Image (tube, rainbow, N blue to C red; front, side):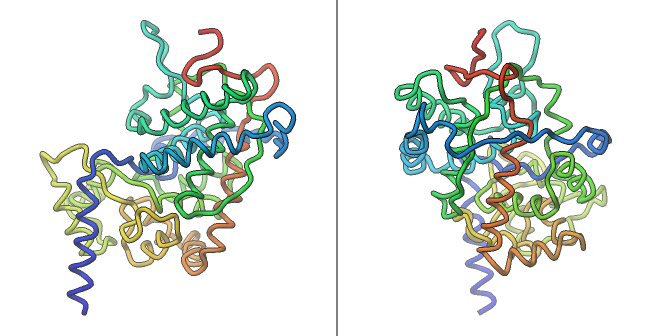
Length: 354
């Protein structure tokens, strides 16, 4: 029986690795190893949003966006995890303000967020989805709804479409007038971040340890490229050996698809090796079985401060769904742009002044 399970398990993992068009993982969870500014950064400003913000100006906003996301999920499933990841990358860098959507300006010497290495592998399906939703919204409610709000709603829709919780998205964000590449690196995760670093960064965003563990659960439908976990397979912490915490079967399967030298850079692996297409709580059970692909994911179970939260969410899907919904709502309020600090873009990839 054990051999049968192992063979089936290995087959399922390997069958996912060669889908090079699938999106990479969501943020591993967050901060550059050499960054010491997180603890000194001022606490984020949270603004009041509302469920009925567009009740008079665009009352059908949720339905309009849903018509786009539903079609996209059917025709391009990769858009789901990609858009959720895009929302993370937007909110953690200077707030949920659609600054990640700004495209480079030809001939400009000022780089935007999308041009940083940390963001270059964000899947095109996510940007395309937001642009399609923006066009649909503009057709019904021209000049009213921000790209930032559209991204927040679209991310929620994909969570639900993949089997996750439905949560109401408060609205009222404006789009940022700037997108600065220099803000990216200190605010996005590294796959070798320690739990200390992760906790500090999340705290700097006004998020708790429970929020951090719950939001990491978005990896239940995320994918990661080989270079994000190769060190665990061959040279963990400079030891020239694999990570001893990784399950031996998983190590073997990952090495088959991600050789130490000369591998295909487009190969991806699911962060949830058991149910990679379902938004469920299997991710946490994987961590308890040493089946975490990313070091930062596995670290959540290995650290005594976050292990009880992992175990709680692994036991109770409803608890995970509730905590995830709460975390997404809190994250969605980070450094909101309102009033003259923001704008309502007509094209999500361009400032109004462009």
